[in-house]
Image 1 (cartoon, rainbow, N blue to C red):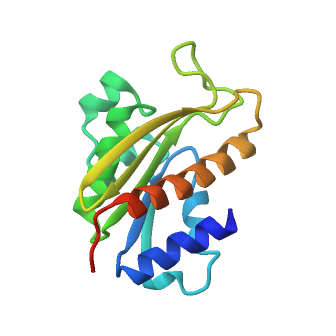
Image 2 (image 1 turned 120 degrees about the vertical axis):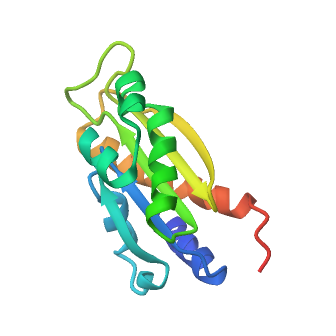
Length: 164
């Protein structure tokens, strides 16, 4: 994972891009992972831990109706989290994570291990849902979320048509 993290940061530096994130179930672990790399401050200046619905509405402008209709763990919510990040930061790249890390909190429709991600590049936002094994520990699910997010945003960036 360290190689992917370094590749992500190198890509951002090489292309003069900045990254920001909004996290729910990972509670800042993605941001913490980024800042474990010396010199990351040239591409990373801020992040949000929006664990509650009210914080998603307050800081990221996620519409109340979206949260009431679809819930915090949904495609719609992570889409609006990314949209809000683009509006409130000057970052080129966004990563948003909202899910159920367990061991409680899951439902039949959204069991423990259900995590929605969004990856944004210059306001083009992609979303995905990953269903991690509900038997995994809370910490393992959170770590897997961060690994997944690093791999996927790097993939989005590498597949983009960035020409600098």
